[in-house]
Amino acid sequence: MTQVFADMPSAQSPLKIGTRGSPLALAQAHETRNRLMAAHGLPIEAFEVVVIKTTGDDRALIAADVALKTLGGKGLFTKEIEEALLEGRIDIAVHSMKDMPVAQPDGLVLDCYLPREDVRDAFVSLECDGIVDLADGAVVGSSSLRRRAQLAHRRPDLKMVEFRGNVQTRMQKLQDGVAQATFLAMAGLNRLGMDHLARGAIEPEEMLPAVAQGAIGIERRSDDSVVAALLVPLHHGPTGDRLACERAFLARLDGSCQTPIAGLAILQGDQIWMRGQILRPDGSEALFDEGHAPVAQASALGEAIAERLLARASDDFFDWRD
Image (tube, rainbow, N blue to C red):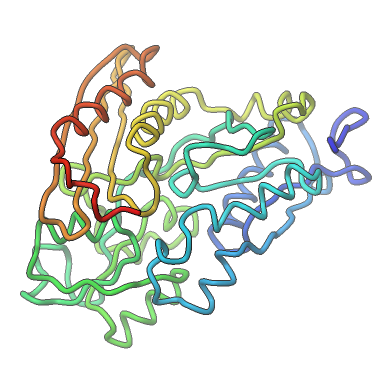
C-alpha cells in the first residue's frame, strides 16, 4: 500500500518517518523532519515520527556484551523498519548509512542523503588523550570489528573487549573501569550535542573510518512518486557521489558488519579520491589501496579499488568469515 497525500503532508495526513528509538536515531529523524519542514514550509504537525523496535534492539538489551556479528549482522537493525515501509505503515525510513547493508529489499530505494557530518572516529577516555597514551596492555572497549582490527594492527599489546550500548552506557562502563578507552563516531556525538566527550577526533590517516560514516540516508518505496518529490530538495549531491564510491567498494568486497573494512571518498573538484582498507580481524594483516577518478566514475573507482585489494589478499585472507 502506498500513502497518497492529497496535496502536501498535513496534520490530518502526516508523513510518517520511521526510525529506531535510540537517542541518535531520533536526532537523525528529527533532523530529517526539520529539513522537510523548511524545504516545503510545513508545520511540525505535518509529520509523525514512528519509533520501530527492531530485532537487534531487543537482542542488544539481552546480550549487550556479545559481538554484533554473532547476533546476525546489520540487518537486525533494519528488517522491521523496512517491513513497515513496504507495508505502508511508514512513508520514509531514516538510517545511519554506515549501518546499512549494501542492498535494499525489492520495492525500496535509497537515493536521498543529507549533508555528511564529520567522518572521523572519536577517542573517548577518562584517563588518556589518545591512542599513543594508552599504557601497554590497556583495555579498550569496542563492538566495531573494523576499529578492533585497526587498533590491534597498530597496538597488538592492547586488550580488546566488547562494548555496546548508547553513549551513556559506554561512559558508565568507562567509569566502572571495564575499559580505559573506547571509540565513538564524531558524527553521532555532534548530532547529540556531546562532542565534549571526545578527547579528540582521530584523523583518517591514523584510523580510516567505516564506509558511509557520518551520513544519513532516507529510504522510501520505489513506486512512491509523491514522497520521491518531497525528498528531492533534501538530497545532497556531493554526499551521494561519495557514498556511491564507498558503497560500490563495500559491495564488491561483500562487506558486512562481519568484515573489517574501512573506506573514505573525498571530492576534489571534479575528481573523487578514494582510500580503502581490509584487515584480518586480529589485526595481523592490513591491506590498503587508493585511487582517483572523475566524479562521474565514482562507483567504478570504488569497485576497482576493491578488485585490487582482493587481488592482493591471500587465498585464506577471508577464511575467518562465514
